Amino acid sequence: MATARCRACCRLATIVALLVTIGPARAPGFIPQSPVRPDASAPVVGYSVQHTYPHDPGAFTQGLEYWRGYLYESTGLNGRSSIRKVELSTGKILRQRAVPRAHFGEGITLWKSALIELTWQSQVAFVYDRDTFEPRGMFSYTGEGWGLTHDAKDLIMSDGTAELRFLDPETFRERRRIQVTDGGRPVTRLNELEYVKGQVFANIWTTDSIARVDPVSGRVLGWVDLRGLLPGRDRVGSDAVLNGIAYDEATDRLFVTGKLWPSLFEIKIGRFSDSRARGVP
Image 1 (tube, helix red, strand yellow):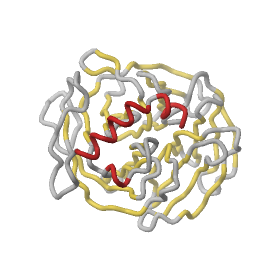
Image 2: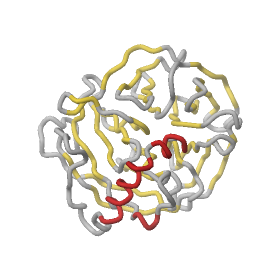
Image 3: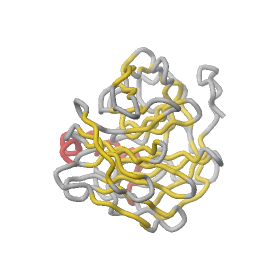
Image 4: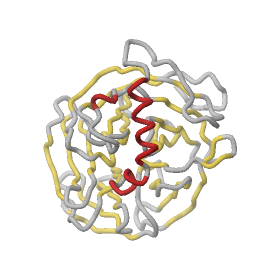
């Protein structure tokens, strides 16, 4: 999220960075599991890295999408925000459009032939043509904008709280909300989102954790612990946190990266043995 929020949570970020630094190094096979949070109730799994790709280390990544062989990425910070089409294998930026400097770009999603982008505190979402990045229009909403994804009928939006909003993709009108909980406790700081096999994957800001959320009940079905994915020595300060999830439905590939990360990773996550995590491969 924003630099201001990073400063406000610098102590927490320092702790997270320390955990990453002393945590397990990346190696073949799944990373040893460890609790995502002290009060975690849902099962926790690790991951393995399938491929590593270049990523622009200057990109303050806010949103990530994959479509037909390419990545679509949004970056943040006032005066530096942009939307991009990126070649997966090389990290080369093939198309880019700057966001007006008054706005702090946030999460994106691709809906039909449109690319929709949130802004952090401007309370507006921009709609672009997916192929040309030419503006099509804009929507307004209340509160902050953080992450964005969609299922077959709704846009799904996070705002930094424990709630997810479900919006009409054509009007941005709010249809419903759910509160995300684990063991009955709210899970806050929901950030970058991706819809994967009937579940909402939600990165928890300033952590290397992804919650797998039931979009009906809001219950966390499982946690993915990504500590060790990018070692602390490769992170340039407390802003360089995990933030970017993209799913290739055609080939069942999951990609993750972070703000100011030099690499983007294709990962395979562990298998949940808990029957509550229905729909898990």
